[in-house]
Length: 363
Image (cartoon, rainbow, N blue to C red; front, side, top):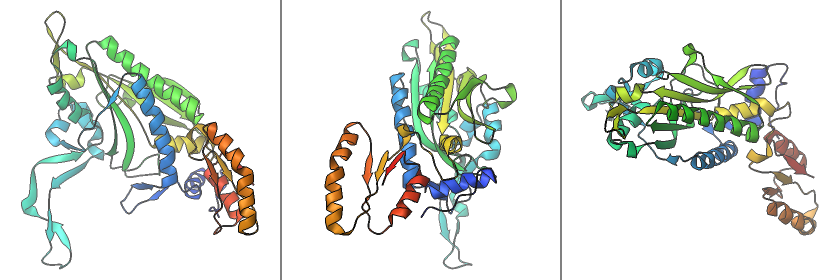
């Protein structure tokens, strides 16, 4: 049976973690501050990912992938960006371990395997991507570049919370290059609205769309657009951001193009992203003291049918009886689970599906 859930009004923080546990979404891992996203939780994230990916492609973007490791010299190239993320960076300094002769059976860092240049484990990918764009862009004919990547990033947070803030998390990050300032601003605003529409239409969460104040802008950005969502505890959650980067990264990495008049100019840039924090927003916006509440558009299972039967013959009769209903629901695009697992009692199943937020359960 699903784990007992703390009442939301008694302790909101404990309630949030209890819902995650009861719905079997995620758990803490053996690595400090990192999480294991369990199959049911990952199925919801896949729904989010698939819908957003389609929207990105509909707006002209293509997917690519860039390295996890960023040479420290590249990371330092845009000073504000480097300074903004410096305290959260994990850094690779050596490439090999060896047996510890003092403590047999233990491993130690091989001091002779020190990297010539330290590598930052990406907290964000502007540095490695703009170093790459320098090779891709020569003329106005090469623009715009509209790239997205689905990846993981590492930000060595001291205080972590499942889905909301972890040392490693999953996200997507868009990185675009444009010939004009107006085009880049239009892109940043467009993607912020893509995020806002998605959160409202699929998560069922109203958002406020606007600009961050100067002190809260993304490090290295000239403007940061954002969507803010109100949670049930009355606090706002930043659910997505889209950044107008100006020419800051183009200047840092010397990314120029020849315009139609034959003159060289620096490229204009944007970046934008949402992460598994959307899972946290989903949980905190709709769930109750019985567990997770899922919007149907993001539910891995829409209908659970729990047969109550005596013996295999009776189960076969019930299966035959509900088969037309299951087929009709599937034709409507719904995912149906007929739960005939005889290892769990019906009462256990009812509580489990309630905790998992299955939109409809039939008994």
